[in-house]
Image (cartoon, rainbow, N blue to C red; front, side, top):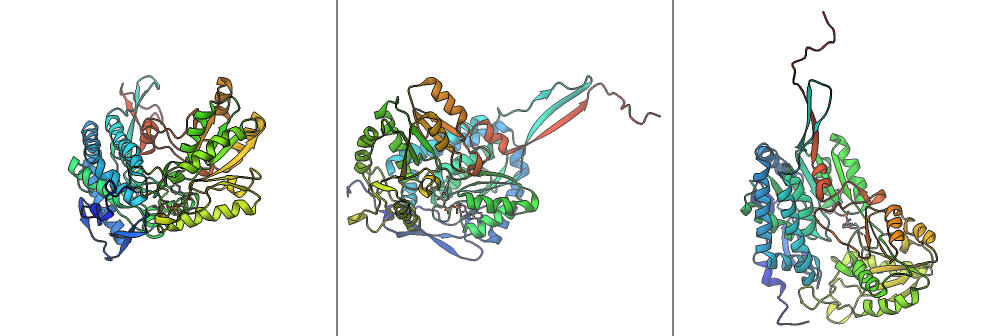
Length: 502
Ligand code: NAD
């Protein structure tokens, strides 16, 4: 660790926002309760954050309802202009946001700087530009009538965000919802609330009116559940586990909310024997080890054609073992800690599960000692599974843990790839054009990356099938998610209706 380059956590804490953000103000929870945000590097407390309960959610919803008429009827271009300003402010505060995100989540600073912050700004910029371009249709109907569609905001939107990419997901969820004219009550994950509170403050500075965005950190089973149940919230957008997704669907039934679910994944990353092996090795390491594997789209099943499996692993295993673990705020760090010690323990449990099923540990498999022993670290871990039906080949581990499987033919590769209940990210490495497109067509997945992995862009739809959820973030799809379509009929020629003629 480089003592000169690595700021202490306390250097950042003086400016950290730690109250609820409701109606344009930072306020304490009605109950006065707090939860402690912890630095996963050493499990030291960062700050006590106000913890929202039902009364606070009700206040946030009431503020959003008051703000809705003005925000939803504002010229779309004006909403867009404000979102573009948000993007500018994120860029102006890029270094602060990157450090805050790394402190709270464990993302290596180099990734927070290079990916999380620019992607969040890009998302606000994209949807800022989109606000006045998402238009309805005129539909050629019967003579004498004009029919057109209006895309109307759904109203008050509840958004429940996980802990793996809190800053970026805040952008992914808020930017399209706001561009479409909705007001928001957002609950960040209880363990990573800090960047969303700061973003809310920047949004206020950019001109987002009071009440349009409300941030309510709190417990999932209390604040999250209440958002999903709330009779005045018209839609809930959720990213997180499949089990919680199910609870949200049940809780939303009272007022038949629209529900959008981004859930887990068990991404197949398939390397064929005609692949550029060096590119596949590097891309596969990125696919699983970026953000310590805490990504729903991670390439967590590394599927190798048996002809190249040994040669691939001869390159991949040393690369995995060479990844530099360390304090996320150290600029040299390539992999930080997992985001909580509870999650670290869950990931490590899977090493035992793999071995009990006859799997072979090829690399990693434990927490490093020394100066990292107090943190939530797990070494880059590679396990060869005995069967594609094993738990480690079927269940989402959500850590720096990749399960290796081999296949003999394209048919077998497709069978293994499509053998889980999930269908989110997927990738393949091949020189064969026809094979690439065949797999793109036949994989059960929301996204397919060919000779790459884990690319995202605000214009490109993101989401899954099966138990990976439904609905899409990003692009025009996201605007559809956050709007209702109204069909308007106009009797242009003033025809007298012919029914019940007298
Ligand atoms: P989780 O689903 O419990 O938490 C995600 C969010 O949902 C958090 O904000 C949490 O407070 C909230 N939440 C929890 N219970 C709720 C409820 N009953 N009603 C409403 N909201 C509720 O996820 P987790 O337990 O923190 O993580 C475990 C697993 O979740 C991971 O192993 C992974 O499978 C999955 N996960 C997926 C993503 C993703 O990007 N798709 C992100 C994080 C976690």
